[in-house]
Image (cartoon, rainbow, N blue to C red):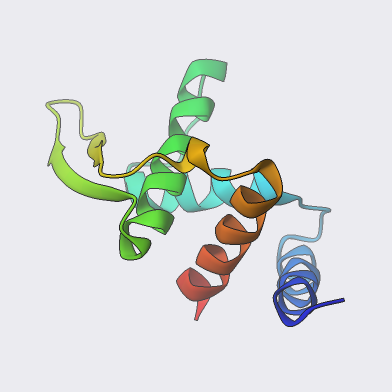
Length: 107
């Protein structure tokens, strides 16, 4: 197991202990999205949950040069501009990059 994977597993254990529930990458992205949206705690529709995960990915990958913050809309949702395509990376590379970015976010 490489260093990133080890640190990722350690983070998941820590979050699971704090939340008293199992969590995976999608759950972590959802939590980061809710944090970054910075609105009241409420129920979100399926579409909003997808948008929250998108917010998380944009926030996480902006320090790596993939996205740039543009604005917050009238409903309080942040919008990002894509600077370079994440889809140009392989699925494995995307996963590793996201995990690295999450580790940076939580440090």
